[in-house]
Length: 247
Length: 323
Image (cartoon, rainbow over the protein chains, first blue to last red):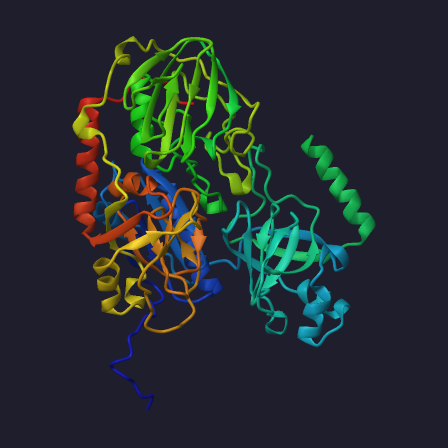
């Protein structure tokens, strides 16, 4: 018999339901779970798309995150409670019948050296050679769980336990654009040069965020990413091509 | 009014081009940015016959010196940065005419922190992801994605309608906010308030918190009695909102403002109500906040009332073309 403790507060949300919590008077967060889990995130992405598809006037933003959807609304047009009622009537995404992910992006990375200054530290942490570390990092199809931190920054997961090195204790003041990093079981790409504390293992020549494009962002939540290792010559060639395309 | 040019003779401490924010791209991690004080921005725009969302200049603590090339209608709202033209003081919360060749000089903040300068037609900068707002950290939008510098040249857009109807208008005194060094700010419990003991909300409301110098458009770091969580279970990043009160591990609240990141990993114990964000935007380092708890329903009513009063006193111009 499993022991149950009636005092233990249950925060788990059942598989088919969600919980609405006000985030101030101009946003509401719809929570689907309390963990980083591809099935929970799949329901998040499905629900976010459903909300967008309603084309309700006065909905300003629908933000899918690891385990919840935050809906920002014009508080002069919507009462939080009215929106909550409408949201509860939408079809509930179930964890069954959800495909394993959206389109797959293959992202070239020049690993190590000045492009990935923390690769050797990560290899030591993992007890692997740098080559084995790259092999392991490129062996996974990562899910784009969410975008955040800076425009176009994807939170990808899950990184194999062995590579799950924590952040730097002191973040770098400037991380070059295109840097690929690891923070615990997440891996990500810095679309623009920002401060950052993730362990940098390589760099991609592919732009993730192009401000002036009609379609400025390469990745969306729910899509898949697989990295592949490239050499210096390929990096330079691709970087040159993208620069020319942007002129 | 014809489009005019404005030369930046002195940039001031931190002057940026802002509208009411960049919505529609938060799901890609793009911060909303926009004016910190929407109330003052909307009023400034209405006083010169602009649409509410026209781009204005947000001037922080110490204002710029601007040379006008062309006649313009302007309005200055928000903090009093002692604006003058030719040594003569310029009234706030009022539509005024500025003739070509004038130099508009701002000083330092007497009351409040942020002043808004609307110019007939609105500041003409490229629309980036649907907005003219500057987000400096990501160098997005506004004037070259950065605060103004000496020698910058700004243009205004062609105003699509005559400003006659709005000129000479002044906001009624009772709608002009009073900026104090200590303010009472209302909030409602946040999505993670139950990660904190019940006493945490009492702590938050019983004493005042001071805005520290480590505060900017992204957020205000506050200092005061520590707010401590019940447990230490890992909190998974989720969506943030302007006005959210985040509690990091050191227990000192961070109040998220216009340039906030779209997602965050600190639990949010509360959220400042939208109607009180304009007052919050006018706080400077050293100013103090006393938080008071209200309800979601009251928050909504307060906002609607605030806007209804404004709409009576200074109606929004209709039939503008959408950008």
